[in-house]
Amino acid sequence: MPVPSRPSAKLSVDPTVTPAVGRAAEAQPADLTWLLNRAAARMRGELDTVARLHGLAGVRDWIVLTALGVEGGRTQLQLGRELGVDKTTLTSLLDRLEDDELVVRRLDPRDRRARIPEVTEAGRRLQTRIAAARDEAEARLLAAFSPDEQRLLRALLTRLADSTAASGPCL
Image 1 (cartoon, helix red, strand yellow):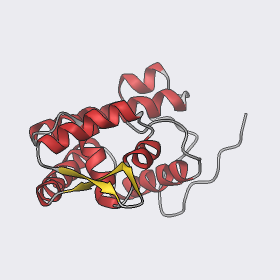
Image 2: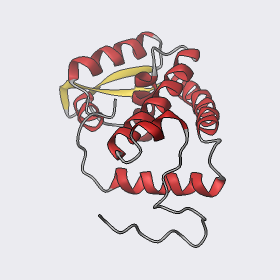
Image 3: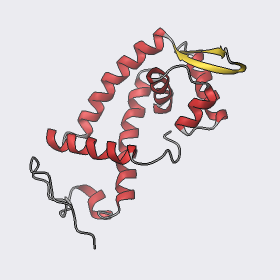
Image 4: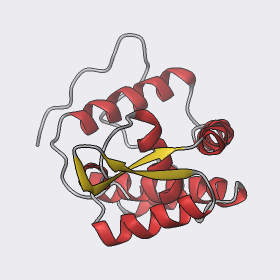
C-alpha cells in the first residue's frame, strides 16, 4: 500500500482519510477513476444547463467557442484534433454556431480547401455572459469546500491535466 504524501502545512487535510460524504463516498471511495468521472459528470451537467439557458445546444458548443476564443487562426482540422472531436461532429457543431452568428469560417490563405473558424463579436459577448454563469455554477458545486480546499483542488487537477499528453476527447 502506497504511503500518502504529507499534507500541506497550510491546509488541515489528511490525505489518508476519505470523507464520508454522500453516496459517492460510500459506493466507491477508493476508486479515483470513478470519483473523477462522477465529479466531471456533475460539473458537465451544471455547465450543460448554463449553456442551454444562454441559447446554446449544450456545453459542447460553449467549449468550442471557448477554444476558438483562446487561440485563433487554427483550421477546423487542427481544432478537432486539439479537442479530440472527429471532423463530422465538429462540422455540425460549427454549422450550428455559424447559423446562430456566433462563429464565421474563413478560407485558410495557405490552403483554400481548409477553413478557419473565428468567434464573432456576438460570440465573444455570449462567452462573457456564460463565463460569469459558469463561475456561479462552479461556486455552487464547490461550496462544500473551504477556499483553501478549492485552491488545492484546482492546483491538483491542473497538475493532473497538464501532466499527461492529450489522450482522448475533452467533449
